[in-house]
Amino acid sequence: MELFNIIKARESVFVVEQQCPYQETDDMDLHSWHLIVSIENELVAYVRVVDPKIKYEQPSIGRVLTLEKFRNLKIGRSLMNEAIRFTEEQFPNMGIKIGAQIYLQNFYESLGFEAASEVYDEDGIPHIDMIKRK
Image (cartoon, rainbow, N blue to C red; front, top):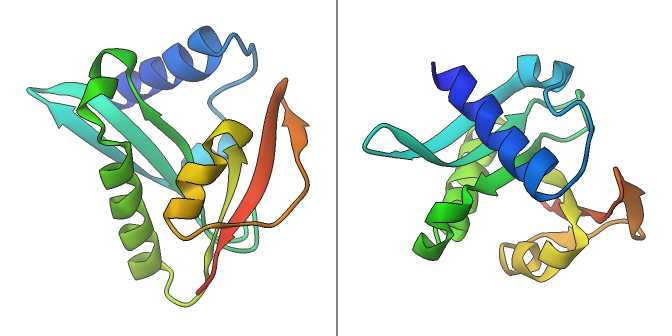
């Protein structure tokens, strides 16, 4: 049931809400850690931590989301801080690389990430690679 709720939430945000038709689940899910926030057994927020050498040389954090009806709780920063802590604990001294939607660049910079690429298009949405150093 938990996997179903994760997939449903990711499709709700990344496919439906962002109007971006693409294969949302992928093979990286099999090489990832899936962190969730729930309130009274309802999925509220989610993040995926991808093992090193799967997407990038470094471990990666992605698919960061808070479902729309819970965004007023402002838990994105807490979730990202936990994902960073978890990633650094699991993969010490490797750094973390993300592919961030450009409108969130300032948010990720406030968490210690630095721009590491030019802006590029991914599924019709401007992105930028960012790195949090070791």
